[in-house]
Image 1 (cartoon, rainbow, N blue to C red):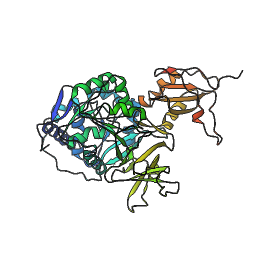
Image 2: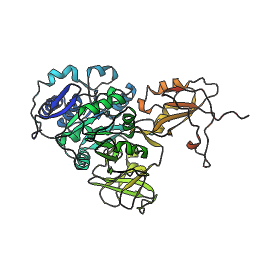
Image 3: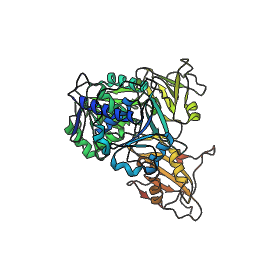
Image 4: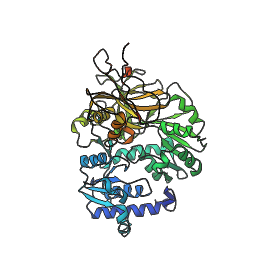
Length: 499
């Protein structure tokens, strides 16, 4: 801010704030929050739509010493309420149009729209810092295998380490313009919002409507002068399919799900530099990076970012030789504090690091192996957690939602890619005898409790689930659903009757 006070820091549609204006408004909001009791690690729910005010709100909460909980207003009200209830957040920041999303919230409500003139009357001076590196910057909710999402607690130390690492790899400077299309409830958004700010660059945020429309996103990329953008492979594929021709001034950061080999060359043809990033939410967004320069049979996720250690271990927690597949464990500054109010699973996933006494490591549940050159190959999940379009999803949470519906006896959900690049969630259910359940009704009910990205595009009724020799559901033997648009309703059962 002191180096480039008059440069544009953030822009959204026809609105823009310079670094000096952003800092002043964030300070004013922080003074207001301090006045209502927000201090060190006060949990603050943050549910506002994408605009320049996102930056004012996030920075204001941090400057006051608080910890924000990003909540996408596009999520179902029941899920938003569950987050607030689970976190027991005493303060909720929102905008007037989001009022109806929280009918039962009893904490301190801060309506930015209604209070904006009051906020602008506050002092714009920097506040005394009350935050330490080990205090929490945010708590972000991820899908939970028990049917209940869990909050990952991220300290400032890990987040600052990530931003510093990314300022070097892939690198950014004050002349860059970073396009941000990601929801505030998705941890990938962190580098999009903060990395440009620590480098003196500009963040150009796009609306949800634009971010989900390939043609409109392609037009924004063409006309905005963006020099960097981060998105999932699914988003980049959507852009290409929408006719986006690329820019030789653009650095592409790709992550959130595995890089499909068939996407590499089309992206290389459309950019200045292509980077593949990997990392779970629990180790602060990204843990590895790899610059892609050519098509390979499989694309590695690279080497660890600064102050990060990677271990590929066997069942006895012993290191495996190069080329051998095992579970990936991650240690270093990025490791989260744990899960909010989930002591048991925190102890299971965040464990003592036997190789660096006094430190901790995170069990990713991902399968990986080291290449001879030190690059890491990501080989999928050990369990049934998946990533679809960049969103990490516990399939058990969707299954739990399905079996709660009247008439459903059991459910299995899986991510399928029956056509290259067409990854989708498919639900399979067995029904109670005599039940009259339509698959459209099941999807409609799920939308009341789950965000859209977790609702299966297809739900099929089957007579029984195929079993493997060990008695478990053989997911690979489940039937291939028909192709078609989202929301297809099926009454077909499987297996087909014998003749």
